[in-house]
Length: 284
Image (cartoon, rainbow, N blue to C red; front, side):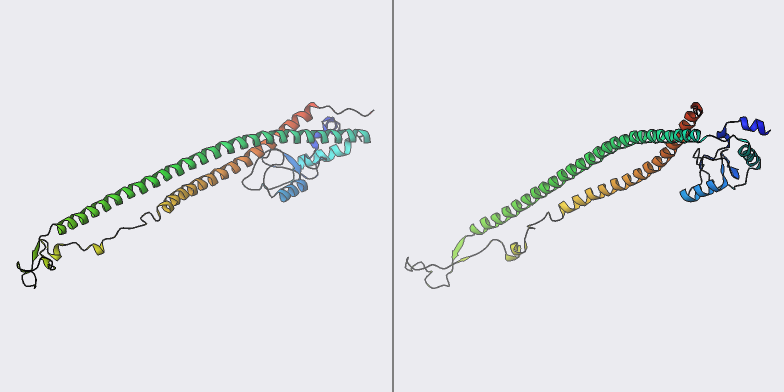
């Protein structure tokens, strides 16, 4: 059995976290295995409960038990594997370093594409929001101007009506017929023409029928608060848009986390394909 185990590729006995042969290996529900200490340290360091290899997320942290079969096989392989020359170890380490950097390049390029899409989406969103805001402000401004002009026309008609009433009363007063008062000396027909004549005006309207214009006033600043109320309406719309954008941004952040995990998973799978397709040159 030992000779059969020694023929298997070493990668089957390597922990992907420490890059060494398994020590007290544990297998989690997704099927991947790690050293018990390596996995515990990884989960503690990242405050997570997902597989470091495939990124599968577990609702609860799995109970870890040593896979005794894999542990025994790994121990046997450790005892029977041939010693590698130092230069071969160096070649393997270099290959791993190259693969890690290739993965990093792939993740950076993919992240850049996501970033470009984010820029374009943000530009479109800003155009949409600010165009709607400008339209709303122009609409509210027109409504304010129309309201002010309408109020002005109403006040002008009101003043014109009042002026006409006053002018009519003035004309009525002017049409009153003056009659000489016979009781006043000097008002007789035999008096001197040069003497001053005192007359008494008998009005056709009694004082109670005359309007008391001293109480009639008009508001000189009728538009106080119109602009402020219109601006408050615009501010309320802005507040609604801000709340909507906040919810949208939260969804985008959640989507970004999911995409980031998918990217890491894709990179790991790609790395596995490279590893399987790459032959390690033998030491000369």
